[in-house]
Image (cartoon, rainbow, N blue to C red; front, side, top):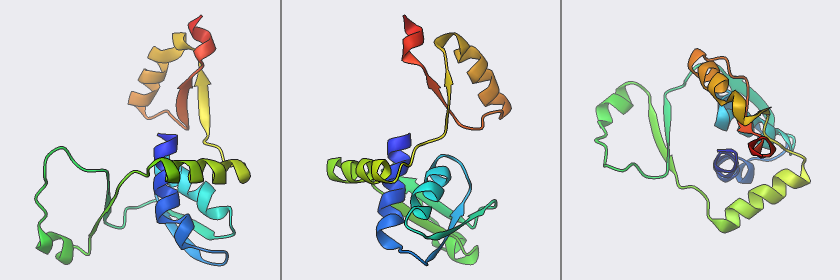
Length: 139
């Protein structure tokens, strides 16, 4: 998810904003978390909005085509946008950019024997970061 989030954020924000610009990020979840870190690194003023502004972002293509009702979009002041996940070149650019600016994803490292507890916490909404399993605990 971190690489996906980084590529989407890089593709949609970093290459299009510059120092002194203002950027609003809706939500501080996976994509929002990385958007704030990546976009603020070149000096962009970032504001996080806690409510949706009616924008749905499709990442990649859905398995089955979806019907889009134009009048619901227009009447509700809604937007529908799409983004393909970056290829090898974009992935490398994002990784290089993050390494150069010391941008990392916030995680909670757990041992494999904590996986059930992590799952229960996820169901309860008690997750502040991404859970990452320490592969050393598999030994």
